[in-house]
Length: 243
Image 1 (tube, rainbow, N blue to C red):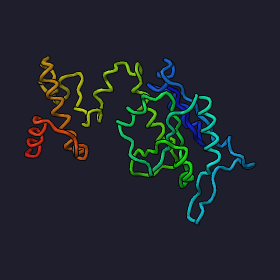
Image 2: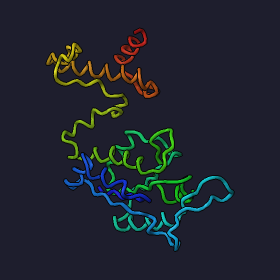
Image 3: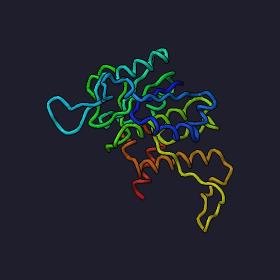
Image 4: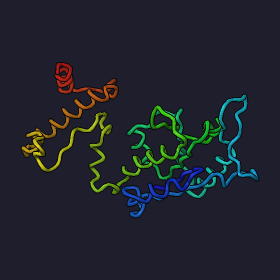
């Protein structure tokens, strides 16, 4: 996979993309990162990339020309970008299913928004996907792009030490992940549930499924709305409501 990032602050990505799983993925050839300062594409002699909004109002808006030209350049070099992603507080919420979808692409372009946003013609005519990572506003789209890239790259084949790890992540099946424990089995009187020490894989799988549902019901009940439930899951939910 090739990932192009269009940003006014390219240095923000240097540490993030070279460390941990993201860095190892690049070393193994699973992904390549290319960061472009789209200020380099402005035709303004002062290298200006923003201007006042028509109609008045506070703040500045990113102009279309530098972004269109920068995106065209990286798309041409990459043989044509399949998806152009804009980080935006107005975008649809980025979910695990979106990470899974995007992990199947060969080339992604991320546009990091700034100021009051981008000229609407960028969003309508250049961007294929507009995503937000939460109901809050940040200074720029760089941190949001980093978060999305991390969630996408870790799903690429061979990136994680164990490819099955991604299959049990929170949200992968619509539920939060179950509680995890490691050694020692008894830490300051706090003991690991007996079932996890039983060696009975069927019982362990059932316990994990139930605890995933319990955690989702307790912390993110919104995830259960519209989710198909088995008879056993309905039974467990009735138990949780009585606790």
